[in-house]
Image (cartoon, rainbow, N blue to C red; front, side, top):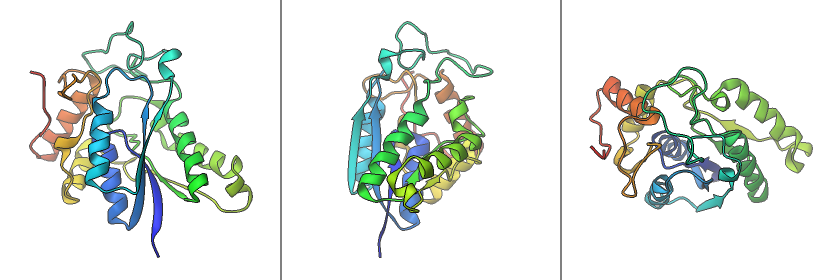
Length: 224
């Protein structure tokens, strides 16, 4: 008997690894991506290609207006993307992003009668985002069970975070073992229209360090 799951698919390194891992574990996958007002659509193009390559059952791209509230360098052109790693919570944090993403995934899961949701949050090599911590996932798990018809009827959800305690290098090693082609992914906060990475933003620096520490050749396309 097949089992289904919803995968939050950003088009980046972590989410493709989660998709490959979920399929390896026997899940038939539905992919969910968001056009939330981010600076570029290169990652959404990557997500679409990844969804086709992995032959997901359905790939839905939901349009959100997070740019209308601003507050992040990823959604507000007036806030510059930093060219160095920042301490604390950086300006690339998008207010409540993972809460909103998971809420949409939860709603779709309830419609499709799916009980498993996968998200590639990571609490080790990450940029200081509060919505990537185990405490957040635990709290959202409780919300999912309380705030839904399915939960009220005793049909509980599971929020899977298989990468949450792994370093970026460990994630890359895992993906490599699963046969993931990271060339197809876009992680850069300031990628150009061709999907080429800037090399200097937080996401690029963490990604480059991950490939270096993993001893795996970096397949990323860079602008320079």
